[in-house]
Image (cartoon, rainbow over all chains, first blue to last red):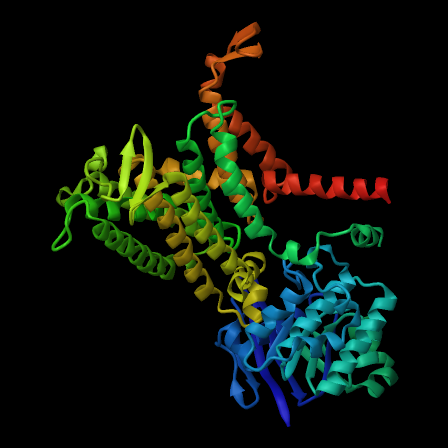
Length: 235
Length: 374
């Protein structure tokens, strides 16, 4: 069943339109990546789905579980089962690990138990009282994913979760994302520039260039199709 | 990695003690404050200690909005005014069946002040929290000035205009002899300082419960990253409105105490200077900390009083003076000295303040000490 169905999405900022008709489908429990070069509109797409003041949706529809999302307040979108992990400033620095996760639990309709969440993150359960501002980039990324998981969403939106992390932490986070997707049956839409990491975790890939989806391919197809990789991703 | 290991090797206070360090700290504060600051060596009079507790409660109420929610109110004096004026108006006029000067009249006035400030704070919040931070500051200032000028016009002869309310504002259970205030109730006499200390403790503990509750943690989330909080399902507008409401209630409570402390309602307390001082005290103390406003209000009032009452510098003792320097010409500029301290705080660590500085020194000392012992 199609969980998220974005069709003909047009969106932009005050400075100009960024998306010119984006179509993305995410099936229930699927792990999908949205690839593209810098400035292709990946983050804009994710932010348009998550809602908020920016970007402004100019046209098209965003269907989630059969209901239209665009125009809803971010907290309403969150309460329908979408967790968003932004690229920057992902955690609340003055709150501890436990407080960050509890915050998600307190504001979700049907949250997970905090211990269930921490089972996925043994690293975090050893630093429960540590404040996010004292944590490394990788730890903060884990905390952000843990917080998204705590809301017990049906879809997780992850904006460049591997950016700026050391290779061994990238692998650890790949494992966590795959594990959550697999065991918790949570669909994931992942925005990434790191094609290798995206190929390692996602089942299906959309490629965005200049505000339009130019290709949609399976992992095997992406691996095989060097031309696509060259032309749109530069790898 | 090294940071982590040093943190773990430092022995912590027993966890239970650690968990209640804020209530314990408040208790130690009220027990020690008067004996220390009112002693002859320091400020030498009793009223300053209760004044300090009142201002600490007021600034802490302000900081719920500023430090914990990220909303800067530039008109917090208006909330103080509710507690200051409404009970004073009630007690001096004795409306309806309630007799002027009665204890019940006073309590009724307090209840109305709290209900009034809550309703006002809620409506004001609904009106202005959506406008963005700068407009929030400007609009609180504007509303506060509007209230100031209404009170100054002395509507229906209720507020006393520029004279304020000075006659018959104290309820019967407040005894005043030679500037010392006592509460006389149920055949017992309670020193004013301890009455203030009681209200202070109850108020500060309530504030502590609020900031550590899920509600308070959500306020911190709103102040740190509003967009992320919203994406997580926090209705940030609602939280901000409630923060204005609660902040107003605590500030009005301080206003009630201030009315008795100064035997009436003075219009200066409603002025823009009071609002400005509140911001400065909070920043000076450290807006990121529960004890920040406490330290800020303390330092402010202490420096003000100590420096203005300190005209001759006599060394080494006033009884046995070898050197005398007349400082009165310099120390009238005490606000300049505080201003200089404020500038240093803002330039070095704007959210840390004196309390943040003290706690990092304490942390450093503890680490050094463990190194020496271990």
